[in-house]
Image 1 (cartoon, chains in turn blue, brown):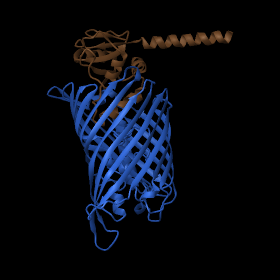
Image 2 (image 1 turned 45 degrees about the vertical axis):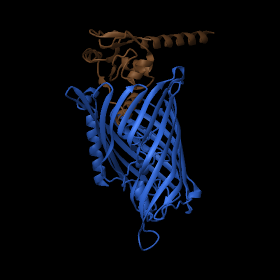
Image 3 (image 1 turned 135 degrees about the horizontal axis):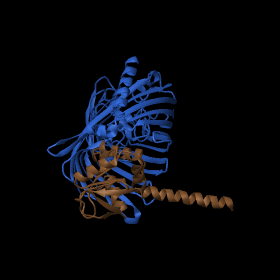
Length: 405
Length: 140
């Protein structure tokens, strides 16, 4: 605990000292010129502390108080008026997740032919819902933890990015506003250190590989009503899990699960007026027709479905201070699981967000949670982290400080 | 009746004050920008980084002030965002690989200096500031 406190204070002190520099001084250190081309580099780091009254959450030992850290650094350059390239490295240490194994977050070559048509390729963040692309960016959100019903910290890797290509653009609709569109396709990432691997291993089915393909679209309508945006996303996904069954006998058996029908859909909205900002999202996941090896051709009738939604409100008290609240709900379809659990997680959150400088933020957040979801749909509550059994409610306090440049 | 007159007088003063603030800024551009005017929608898209050229094909690169009355007026009048909302928006683009952070400087003089030497640069300064070597764009 003392080591973590010291680390947090050092990070905050250093960040505050650097952030106190005038903005133009900071920008002098985040760009340089190579062969006449401006190269920018930017980064972010956050340190958090979570304490819960009963259940341990998000693979952390929150009932005793747990620190968590994440950060990233990127470099990019606009090589011509239409062509830019860049890449970002990301790392984190959150309970048993990632544990300081840096990954390539994105690496993109982006050519914008016209305002209404561009292509980006490489490892690209996936446009899905309000916050999928920015869920790791603590500095762009009011919350210390995004609504976990839709953006679970332990399961972020599943839909975070794809290695492939996007076509995108903004189309003017005259008096009807404008439409931002993205169509994408590519290979899904395989993060062996996220919650799926952790959860399946704890149940006796350790994954040896998880991958797949995805293709989808995201459409955002910037409506004629000032401050109002409405959007929707849809992704068709093929998942493939290689696992070892050690739960049903003395001899481990290798198996493969392949989904033949899987999709994710989201509907969302965002509205800003004066000092107020409101947003919300509804997300639905659906899997069907799993094929289980080593009996090729056999298709189990087992299907999986869950849904989540949240609504939020934020009020900007002053230039440096805002307060917000959200209500988040997650439901796992009871027909999919033979294990009786609560099948849901409800979370009421209040957050105070203070920004002493343009580059520094501090958040104090309270969570009042009811329910623990389902063991087959890891959503923050893992039985392996709670050997005395999961309690029905969880109250948690989160303090998170972040710095970006 | 008396209270009604006071109310309308106050409202008129507030309206006039708002109009004066919006008129206290001017938009300037590098000589490479051919247009003498720009629509408010074009200007918004340039500063929200969704386009890097004007309708006439001129390359456009925004430069912003860090703060101050002209900065607040520009954001309010043309972008419809507060400074913190705009910075959040820029960070969401930079940290997802969609854009580079636009140039930000501290004073009107630095805006003018950047606009003069940078092809396609478009910035805003207080209307009283002198901007030699730049062209003023009418915003329609």
